[in-house]
Length: 158
Image (cartoon, rainbow, N blue to C red; front, side, top):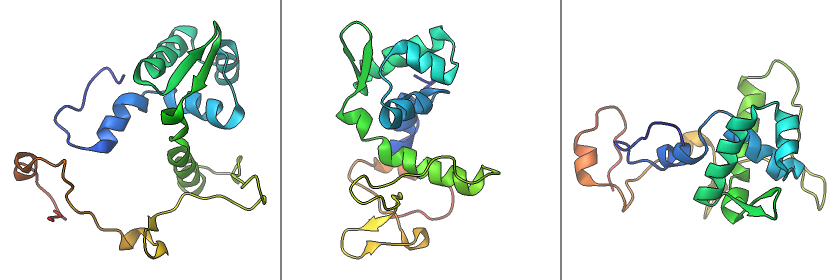
């Protein structure tokens, strides 16, 4: 969707950007996830996005399985689309801390008890951990020839 690809990158972040990294994409998904927007006209009205751009983004989301068409006018998130919620919550929190001059305009709350909800780094054994305690390990999908051509600091090896 970006108009260019990240073919040289062996990275799930790059693959994600191919699907949701264009301008407006995450805001469309945000409105679908958290405001329940499904109709083309409502997305256009709420975002002020050009209709050709909106049409392109929605068609692309349908093509990659992030949204599905229901009836003639509705675009609904699939399971794949709903799974982006944690990424949007994390981006919201980062934006509140580092990019916003005002108090948070949106608060995420647990519907069952009304407590705050946050994105977190969670260890399977220990629970929530600080980001400086997170290390990377090379996964089974990493080609050795890709690593051989990389430069830089912390090069994780399994």
